[in-house]
Length: 67
Length: 405
Image (cartoon, rainbow over all chains, first blue to last red; front, side, top):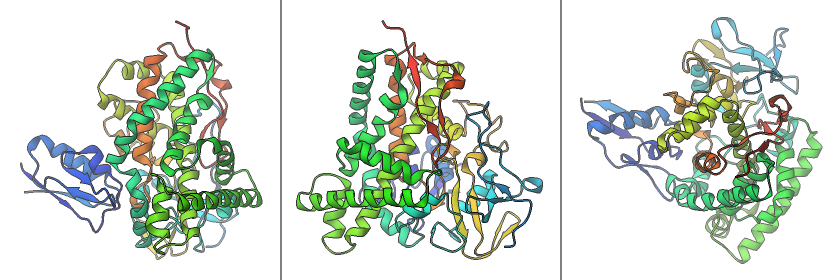
């Protein structure tokens, strides 16, 4: 199963949880702390990390979509 | 809303025999929110389930602005000293704008860069304890100095002034002082920060206050009062929380030797990291709830909250929700979903210092037992002085001893 990550910067509240739990997939802008999506279509080995970031995002700015 | 007879006073005191468990909290029929009465005699809804708590904290129809009518403020002190406009009290869109001016110092990368400095400080503090003791007081000798030094460095506040601002910060967060006392403490902090801001303006350094001065005050985007309010918030909320979390974590591990053994038998950073999530969930130092007021009628999982009604999210009770965290009253450092803790809150107001706090906990708990493998309590457990009367749960002292090697 492949997944796709959507990071909605209009919802992002700069909490940084995504970059903390899935640094391979997300970074945080150095100036405003907002999400930077590094990998929209992660390999199978990072699916759990992507879902963790989705669960922990306090602003529901990260969505993991199954293709 | 009319005063009803069944509203229970919130928060209650903890049961003496269960200092790590939240105090008893009322729940409505079938687990629905109950009505509680707070310090000023007004009533509010109390959210104790995980689902209701998350629903309220992530819904921006609930305002965090204590100046709105109906807001269920934490205490007289909070009302007097903590109600100004800052990232804690602003709703969106203002909240995100203000937060982005501060967040640079709290990002994952920035916090990782501070880690070696934190390690150095922790090593030095443990060296000093080993030299002077046994015994030692973990609260005074380790738990408080670490976050205080970190926040001083980050903000650019002189560490030598820690007694001055520490005492006043404590008064602002207390539930046991009058509004006059808190308000004086708040004003003294503001005056102190004002002088500091003038010094930074004359000679900017590499710290948060200097950056606010240079980037937003000088160009006239925000006035000095605004910079004072932001700096005060970070200073007041930035050390008491982590300090008590460190002290209580050490105590929780000392009194759960099986969990301590599990923690120390692994060098995997993921084990330590998960243990900290579980300690955050289990201890939850922010123990008087997150406060909100509804700005329109909202249905929260079947309960209608009317516009103007206050809501208290008991995050510490929600973190013991059995439907999310089975056997929730047990400290289990291998708990798989410990990361879902609401200890730092949820929604746009989730704690801005959470990454910093985690790194401080990682360094302290990852170092302490390596240096002091025989660390133990120096007094019986029931003589450990818990600090209950503030918005942050904690310890007045944590007397420990060890075998001198």
